Amino acid sequence: MPIEEGKTAPAFTLPDQDGNKVALKDFRGQDVIVYFYPRDDTPGCTKEACGFRDSWKTLQKQGVMVLGISADDAEAHTKFRKKYKLPFPLLTDANRKVMEKYGAYGEKMMYGKKTVGVIRSTVWVGPNGKVKKHWAKVANAAKHPDKVLEALSE
Image (cartoon, rainbow, N blue to C red; front, side, top):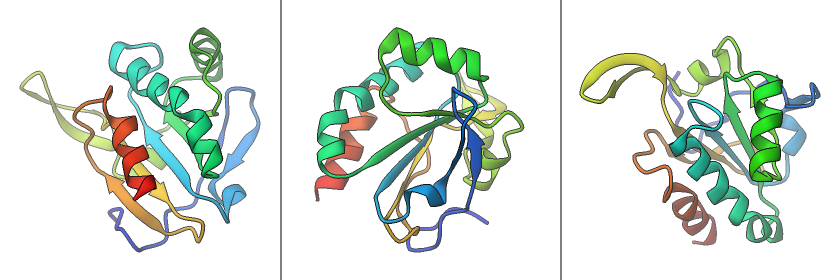
């Protein structure tokens, strides 16, 4: 089932960097930005994460939660969060089941070649649990957080 704006976002529960279980339903009643990224501490992923970090105060004022999801383990997430002072949780989807549900894992083009992997994408889940916006393929990781902020402000 592909992600569709206006439809209920697929439920998930994943461990965060500290081993705590985080469920999408925990944030019912507030906007949630769920972003999927390939790997901790790589150039594009770092720019994207730092973009959300730099917008954190604005996002908090708007009552928005950010959840970053990759297949990296808790140790990698902890190092990444600490190194870049990321204020939001990073969740581990080791078997990529949540990524698959969200269309964030599959065939993609990388350097002109077809490959299978994490598709950088973001889903804005509204307070009612429905998808408000889906960025299916994020082309520019560095500029993406600003685009999300723009959409939240409209």
